[in-house]
Each structure stands twice: as C-alpha cells, then as structure tokens.
Length: 188
Image 1: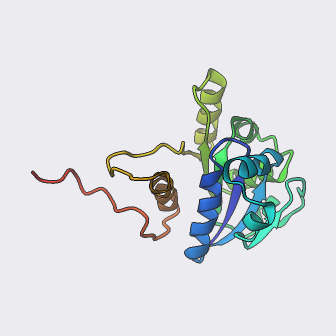
Image 2: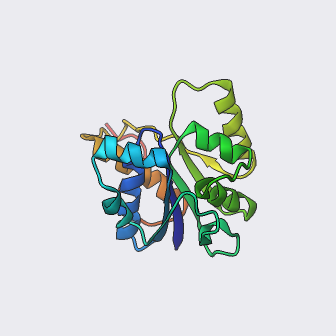
C-alpha cells in the first residue's frame, strides 16, 4: 500500500507525525508533502527538525513541486490523508484550487476516486467551513475531525492520538493493534 500524507499549519502536527511513524511500522509506503505553515507548526508544537520528520517518509516532496509524481493521476496511490488539515487547505480542496502540491495531490485523489481523508482542525466552525466540508464530502472525500473518544478512558494524549489515528487507518482497511474495536458496554 502507498499513501500520501499531507501536513498543514493547523494545530495538531502530532497527528501527521505520529501517522508517519505508524505507517512506517505497518509497512505502508508514504509520500509526504508539508505546507510552509505545517513546518512552523511541527517546530512549535513538537520541537522537531525538518530532517527528522522527512526521515519518517519514504519520499518527501516540496510544496511547490506541482510536477511531482503525486500530482498525477497516473501515479499509483491508495489515497491521501491530510493530518491536520487547515481550513485554508480544506477551502482550496473544496474549490479545486490546485495551486500547490498538497492541494493538487488531494485533487488527484478526488478526480481518480481514491480515498481522501481530511483531519480538519478549527473551532468554532463558520458557515464557509461547513459548506467546504459538505462540498468535499459530496466529491467523495472524508471529513474526519480528530476528536478524542473518552469511552476507552484514555490515560494520555498519546492514547487519544493513537485511537483517532486507529480510526483513520480503519478507513483504509489497514490492520493495526492501536485500539480495540468497540464491543459494547461491559456487562455489570
């Protein structure tokens, strides 16, 4: 399996970086594209250097390289995850504004009917955000806000991140051992 991972400047860089770590451990090949603001968020939130994040992917593409392999529908890919996805990127994807490699790769997924998962980050939502989410959903994309599930009684931020990413991996049918499937409330 091969997936494209996009990281934007929305808060939640931990989702993109942890996703890359998980995909590597699960033998999923990855192409990475990070916006300029995404690199700033990675540094501010995780204090990671660019080289360390790039080393987690099989290939990293510059945001301005709209001629990269992932910009073409002929490139064999199983889909794309944008983690996190800013409202700016969501709006560009919703309106097919392929002015950088990240939004172009997302547009390719939609036009080729490949799975596109957008882990959108913003709150509260305004009407433009909601309409852009609707547009992406109508085009076949999956809007997947990274919301924690408390029924598993997580003991750490890491557990909340992993549970959310487990659900994202489920969208692609990727086997993992991150979170048990829900089997109902315990019997009393």
